[in-house]
Length: 113
Length: 112
Image (spheres, rainbow over the protein chains, first blue to last red):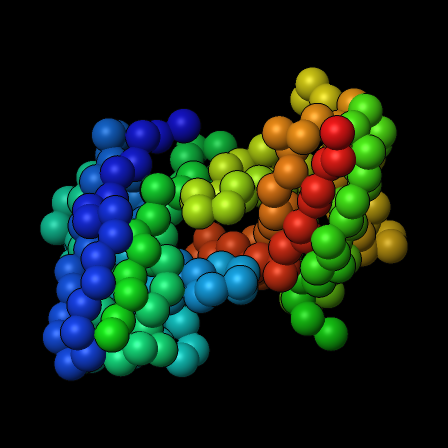
């Protein structure tokens, strides 16, 4: 499986500000995904990020709020914009292996005050 | 019906027992299923994938898929306190570009 890192691992931010989360993979992957896990909840897909194309957002998530970049096959960023306390969550990136399996990064724990 | 459903638990079993975790799914998901383990404060870790009817074994873990009844289960034999975690069932959505749909997770507690 791929080795995935995320930065930052955690952050505390003030409402109204933005935070960019980075996801780095140690091998080239076609598909990267961004998930959100709110406290005590399961995982919800925010968007799928493919290199060379616009990210595909799930219902309830919009590009203005969660802009995503995918400049190459090993890196992606997710920005959480104009944050409110409701954005306090764990944000996870994942990648898909050649065997149809998805592996997750360690996550970014975001607290908005 | 939700696309992927799990009992939220908590499920409590004594050490050494078999833990049985269940998941049902709807017609809106495809035939690829995954079990993840998530320790508190950590990210999900893939344990098993299963695509065909029947059983798939890996060490103390056995995944079972029954397409006729639309359920997938995970058995953990000789449960250990270190198996205490939340177990997430996931299925791949139909024609949804690789999207995984997760159940709400079942919390497992293995008592020494």
